[in-house]
Image (cartoon, rainbow, N blue to C red; front, side):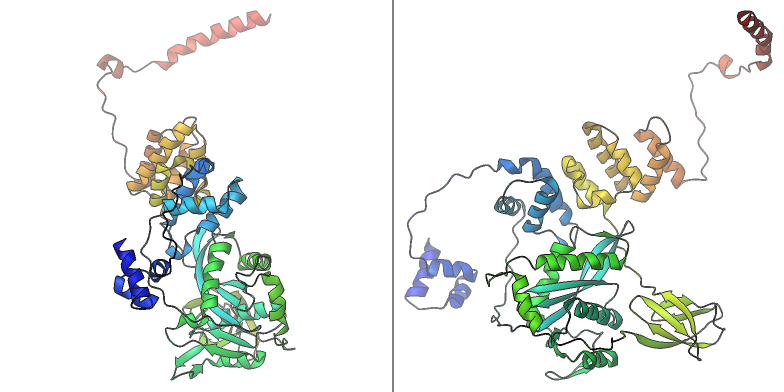
Length: 504
């Protein structure tokens, strides 16, 4: 109360600003404003908190999600709204969004509020757009891989689009922009960028920029004006910064499972159109209605399409290969020592001879960065929350033999098997080796931990001889006994005779 009284004194008597009170008292400006401007000091009626029983069946699931999110980069963690939608859509949760938010808020540790700069709110006219790259992950053919995506946002309507690409190079940037232009049927008259290496060679004073040759031609072809942020001032295109995060949280988490860029691109375009049906955050109408105003301000598309390609020359080595930008391509139809022309698209490479004969048409060798999955960390969570393990995002990406081993038992044994796998991971075995051992063990009628450990030993040390069994219980007379197998041949005629008599 003494601090609150001091805040009130500074505001009323010394006429300090909220910012000055915040600085002098050492508190957040929102707290300073709350007590400085408070007029009603009656003691509020304390309300008894009711137990949120509707969350009980889902508590382990949500706890598992929150704990596994700690293993991810912070920008890829679920928000409370995302958790609510997952519970509602995937598990039939009947509670409210507020119930989930309250539960998540209570379960998460409070972080210190970071200092936030206050920026003037800008009014955006229809038409201009902002562009930026983001990074996320996807499960590509069963492996967790890192991807880039170009976020395209329109501040006036809050509409946004997203195109996944393998790199942030010029070919990918221009391909993604052209695709968005085709989707929307026009070109924004003004587009804001960071100082992307794909577009900017060097930054001069003020607005001076030296652009790459291909980006300069691209601007002239589509007739838009490119605006670049000042160095270190990404907030100048703050709308797309927010759109990058919104897209990742709402369209790319949980991680999509795809087998091609085309498949993911189509899904993200569908989500972009679906997202336009929600209300604008402050204008009281849907994004789709405001988007119509944005579309009216677009420039028309050029009649001749632009080819977002880069040309390079390379010499064929003695192995019939050419190297370009760290990528190696085999061109068996070219002669050793020949200089060839490479036409680099975002997803393919065309190889031409000096006489402009096309020698090869090859997929571009981008390296998708593999993200190792921290299975030890996940199983540490699974053992603590076994009922929520099956609902974890990464559970469905476990190798098939491991999932079969876990699910082929009752709930009590399930918990023990989770602990067993976690123990193996702690001992240094990889999930792939454990899966291989389980696959071999499941060929036997009964599978237990001893058999799996035996298989792990044989996989880890395939050439190591098995130690002799040193048991001392069998008597020497029995141990040294050599049976005379031919004695049993005397039974054959008798057995045949009895069989004949029975047959008669």
